[in-house]
Length: 151
Image (cartoon, rainbow, N blue to C red; front, side, top):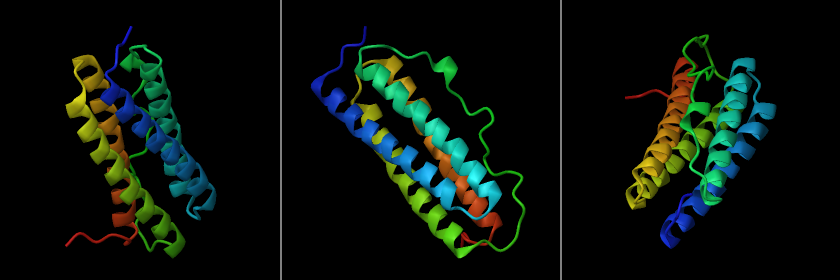
């Protein structure tokens, strides 16, 4: 049984809302994306965000989730992207999701430092790393399509 402080519970409720927004955005953007590969990336990330949401719900209900069920297997990090010119609509979707992932990863960072239980810190850190992988995948996609040029 997990006993949460009031602050931990409040932080988890915030993260739960963030995950819900990510699931909704990725699903919506998968339907709006013109590139089939981007649709696949967004769909995979939506599934993983749903896992994050479910994990947070487990913690809020007093359970300590097993980390074995999570992972980035089968998650495209956009390694085999066909280079070329990207669609402006796809670029806008990617920019929004990259900004969202930056924000969500940052809020996990703050939450992790506020948790007293090291097991919960590890679970939240695992989720944060997956959020960072989503950002990396989107960045790689945008970079390959000429939508994001690092200076």
